Image 1 (spheres, rainbow over the protein chains, first blue to last red):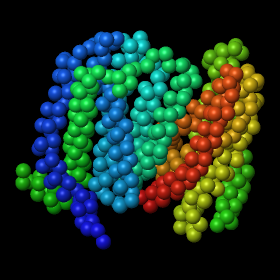
Image 2: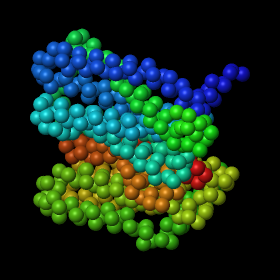
Image 3: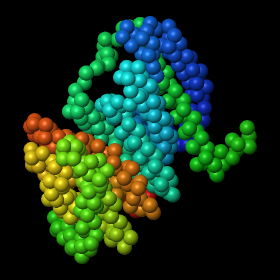
Image 4: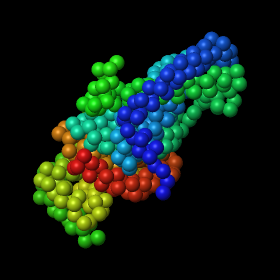
Length: 247
Length: 223
């Protein structure tokens, strides 16, 4: 038999609260540093694009937030699955807290995408395959959050939205493929963005830094939200009372 | 095992037959909303023909969505859902029987009605067969996916609107390929590819939805 105590300790809210406090002490400055480096490099130092000029710089916000919004959905669904299978309280907390962050990042990707669309396509909104599937991802997030809110029994709400998140996970790749196919049916692509591989290294470096920064940002906000949620749901326990009085 | 399946199927069909008025509601909705389209857009046949494939598919989707709300509702209220969960029959099989019954009383009649609506919206001739086939297979997928939403929201007091919020994004691929197959046929191409994808989506939801549904029902009942 393998030693599973670490796994069960992971499920204890008190343990997580103490550990995450220590993690945040170095994670916050590190994330701020990486984000500032990436932003200054991407927005000020990197050369403008030959075709799109300075408008290409929004790429450094748009693409990382789009990537993260998708990753956050998978993280949310995996946390939900862990919660359903091992009945781990902390996993449901992680799922509940990552939903609004993911939704906000999806909204950010949509907004920056449409701002970027104005100089490149000439309109704020184009029914492009990627924008459309992002929009549907946003609706999926809204569904998960709304279902969670609708239950008066918080535990049942968490379980129900975990099932929905898992169903959504099966659907996301299909939605992306469907949007792609639908796009070619109605409007053959006349303009294609540069592929990742053809990006000049001078543009690619700040991009990778921004992705790392966004992951860091996601982790920081997720931990902060989870800590809040834990304090609230455990507010009647001894250790939270001691914490509130002691500090 | 198959005994439970046929019993539930027969029971649900019998219940549906005893409520004929309710049975016709999705079909009447389908027809009424379709009448609104020429009134809102334009009665010109050329314009209607252009939007007919999409409009008919959206209407079928909405009619399924509205009717799926009641799938577990009455069983939940009178306690028979509880009995189904604790019965020795596997819950996914019971769910499958209920979804099949739902499809037989909504999806199938919608499909049979659709050529009439095609005529009313002056759908070009090439679109009829793909429309019937895609609706026949596609509404089954819609019923299966919708059942997950119905199972998740059955215990909530005002689940109806939430159900549509939860399920509509999941319907998107079926709609794209279903309406797309009709559009392709109208444009003079072969509709086989998207039709096969609709079939694949139906097979996938047939495989996964009953399990997701039975899990969701247990959560709805016991938390």
